[in-house]
Image (cartoon, rainbow, N blue to C red; front, side, top):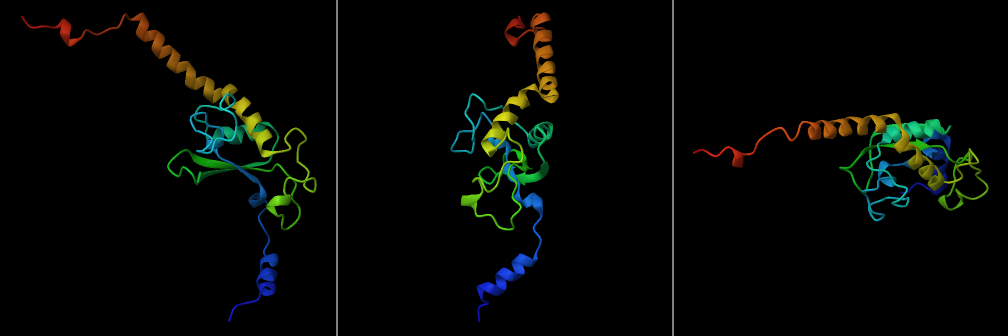
Length: 166
C-alpha cells in the first residue's frame, strides 16, 4: 500500500522550514581564477580572484549589508577535495512556503537590496572586495619582504661546484 500524495504533502506543510535553507549558496570555486567555467567558475576570469576562501566571501557579504551564514564544513559537490566551506546569502525575499525554481528570479520575489538583484551581481561585488581585504594585504607583504631580503644578501650560499676538492 502506498500513501497518497495528499497525506505526504500535508505532513511536509506542517514542518517549518529553516529560513536559511532558502538563501542562495556561494562556493569559493564560483570566484576562483584558477578554475575553468566547466569546473564551476561563474564570473569572468578578469574579475575572478586567486584562491578565495569561504571566510573571505562571508566577510564581504556582511560588509555589503547582506544576511549571510557561513558553513565551514561543506564542500563544493564538483570538487569535494577542494576549498572547504560555503556561504548562504539572502538575495531574494522568499516568504512563500514553496517557490518553484522557475519562478524564483521573477518579480514575485523582489531582491532584498536594490544593488544586488541576482546571485551573479553579489558574486561580482564580492570579487571586487576580496583583493582589498586586510588578510590579503598581509599575505602579500611577508612574501615581498622575503624576496627583497634574499636579493640584498647577494645569494648567500655557494654551490657544490665552487667547493671542488683538490
